[in-house]
Length: 199
View 1 (cartoon, rainbow, N blue to C red):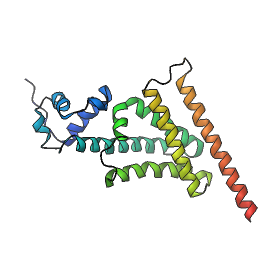
View 2: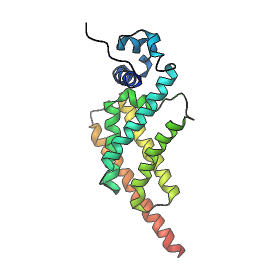
View 3: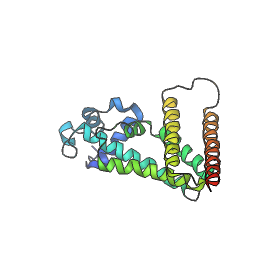
View 4: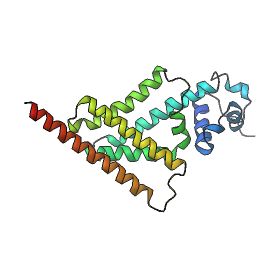
C-alpha cells in the first residue's frame, strides 16, 4: 500500500480543481472530494469549515491564477497587442480550467476582502493596458467592463457548446477582439477631438 498523502489546504484545493475541471462545479461535494483524496469526509473538516469555504477558496485561487497568467502575457506589451494577448490568455484559461473558471464566477461571499482584492487586481491590469490610448478614466472603466463581458460571454458560450456552426471559433474570437480594439481607437479619437474643441 502506498503511503497516504499528507492532507492540507493546498492539497485539498488542488484535488478540488482537478475534480471540477473534469466534472464541473455541480459534482463538487465534501463526499466526492473525500473519495478522490481517499480519506473520510470528517478529515476534510480539520482544514476547511465546509463546502462554502472551499468554494470561496477556489474562487479566490481561480481569479488569482487568471490574473497571474494575464500579467505574464501583458509584460512587455502595450496597446492593441496587449489587449489581444490578455484576451487570448483569458480564453485559454477557461478552456484549460473550465471548472476553476466557473468557481471563480460563483462565490458564496462577494464581500470577502481577499476576493475583492483579487478581482480588483484584474480590473487594474486591464485599465493599465488601456492607458496608452489616453482615455478618460471613466471611459477606460466602461471599456474594461465591455471587454470582460465579451470574454466571459464568448468563453461561457463555447463551454456550453453554443458554437455549433462549422466556422472556426478562434477566427470568430479574433474578429470580435479586433472589432473591440477598433472601437477603442474611435473612442480615443472622439475624446481627443472633444478636448481640442474645448481649448
